[in-house]
Length: 95
Image 1 (cartoon, rainbow, N blue to C red):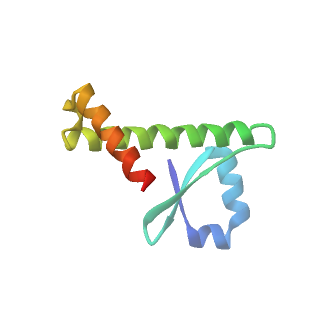
Image 2 (cartoon, rainbow, N blue to C red):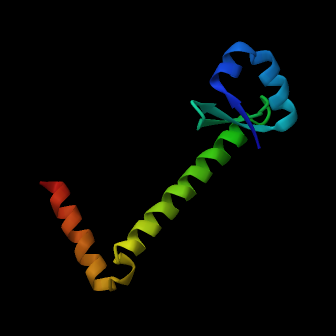
């Protein structure tokens, strides 16, 4: 994976776009830290690519929630305990 800096993007954008066409994906960094992923798309693939990115983010969010749940011991709740939690949450929302 190729890395480029914000400074390089700002100063040599044409070069970066050519490089992106070859590499397909690049990591944009600021002060040495990754801040964005640049991914080559075309008019024909824009919607499909955007949907894929959104799906990947959703999957990552669910996996994160599952890991948090396991760490908190919520994976050991019984169905009755889960139903009670859901009911309490719904009741609190109605207030």
